[in-house]
Length: 107
Image (cartoon, rainbow, N blue to C red; front, side):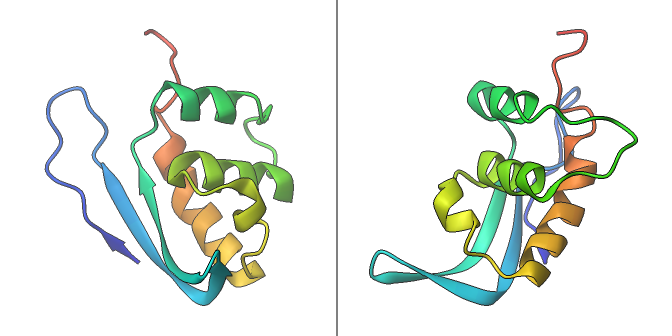
């Protein structure tokens, strides 16, 4: 995994892009998806994450992890569902700290 972020401006998250090379690349529409890049969430991604009904302090369900991966990467959920369990676990662990402060509290 590599973090390709630029230094953050005051008041912005410390990451803009985060790339995880897939251990098990996924074939998609004549191509092979070999990595997943998380980007700073926009309003649409934040709304999608909010709709997952995450419960702070409780473990996430698989469907919630898949939804977060799709929201932060822009990859269709049907493609994300084809990811191998080890890639899902690694991406879920990578996404968890990125979500801190990504909400709209105080906005």
